[in-house]
Length: 117
Length: 115
Image 1 (cartoon, each protein chain N blue to C red):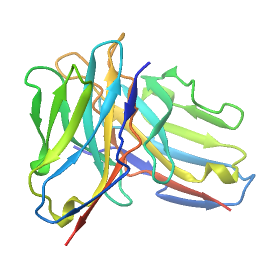
Image 2 (cartoon, chains in turn purple, yellow):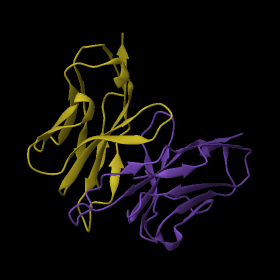
Image 3 (cartoon, rainbow over the protein chains, first blue to last red):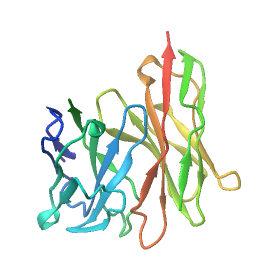
């Protein structure tokens, strides 16, 4: 079974440029998460999807960040325009159900490391 | 709202020595608890989880953790560490509500195993 796939693994851009990250979750997983991870810190939730619906986007800076999960499968996270402080690793994760219940166990991709110059 | 505290940001330990990484959480409702490990330039992977039942849970690579409800703790232990255990370790909690989908992570503990 394929794991969570993210691309690109690395991206270097100049400030004020746009950037997009793509995530394909594990097949059958209805819940998809985007996390931000700064160096030396734990992941911080940006947005959580249940199928195609964003059920928790309270921590997403909506002035420059946007996300979509069309058809409830893969997802794209966009930043426009990027700022120096956006340099970080963007992690995608998915979760499914076990015995009919979601336990919150997450399966992570390898992350997309963004460097803004 | 729940939160997760990992008091030790860095833990150096000699190879073959025991180690304990501490995790405390706060929540007003039932929770599930997790420990994840992150190797350099990789995503996080699950070490072990507590959902219900026995408070002592065993995970991969010889790690175990004990859930203590009265102390709201979920400390991770390994009796003898190896060089390959050098990594970042994150404690996480998911809180019951309509589901257990909301997962909050602690700040992480960097484990360095010294030869």
